[in-house]
Amino acid sequence: MSAFHFDNLMPELILDALASVGLYLDSGLTALNSYENRVYQFRLEDGQRCVAKFYRPERWSLSQLQEEHALAYHLAAQEVAVAVPLQWQGSSLHQYGGYVFAVWPSLGGRHVEPDNLDQLEAVGHQLGLWHASVTDYTLPTRGHFSHALWVLKPIEVLMAQPRWPASMQTAFAHLLAELAHALKGPLSQPWPQLALHGDCHLGNILWREGPLLVDLDDCRMGPAMQDLWMLLAGDESEQRLQLDALLSGYEEFTAFDHRQLALIEPLRTARMISHLGWLSLRWGDPAFPAAFPWFATENFWVEQYRVLSEQRERLKAPPISLTSYR
Image (cartoon, rainbow, N blue to C red; front, side, top):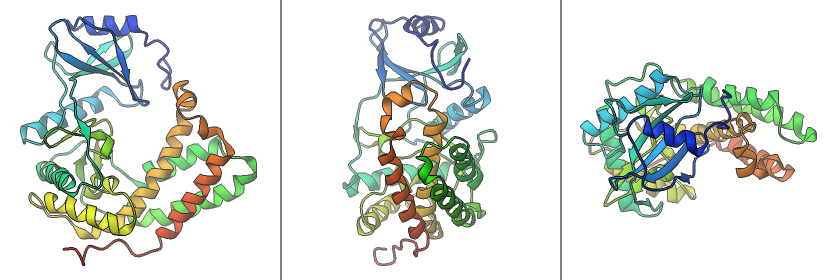
């Protein structure tokens, strides 16, 4: 089975997979927005609304998926507001037809508003509780956020099969080499490692009379800042206000090492590079050209060169400071 395709994941197979653990539907399958995995919403015969996730084959091992679920259960036991998978027949992970899948309750809610400082403080409260709950918790098979994983590996993918115009080959090669060099220092420092959400952006937080953290698919070990910086948006002044609100809630449970503020732009730059590498790596999946047609256009790569060049300059600037706010 291809690591990049879901060619065999037809509705009949999905229904048979759910039936294999005693789940029978009283509705059709509604595909939800997901590219890395395949996610479907449905209603069971007893009226319960659920969501099933079929994991991309060969991305994570079974033990790595078990670590994701175990982390969710651990956090919930510590009263962190996090979505946890349901257990059927004594397990939360199931296998059928070459796929591994899991089922969650369908949870409604709305997204956190990036300019709502009260909501951001509540998110920081949950993240502080999360991080305080995992000081001695490890994810031994999940690996760490690292320079090699987030920078060198995606650059290798991009250089092996360039998607940019041939006329930009030399310029991109030089720019990516400069960024790799600039990012090595900050991303290779021995920051304290925590079991992180890993992809903590506003799309992975539901507001339900408070924040609920969902989708731990990218959980790894890494520095605390990785779970905070993606919640920042706007100019530097706006980001200071947002960060102050987040840390006001966060530090109710655990101290934040303000030296990690220097990681914001390195982590942002690494994510940009990683995202480009991910799109290139997944381009063989028919869902990707359909969803991201602009990835193959010259205008996109011209813009990416401009944005990454700006990040190269931001990496040289002093990190954001909260001295005037706290």
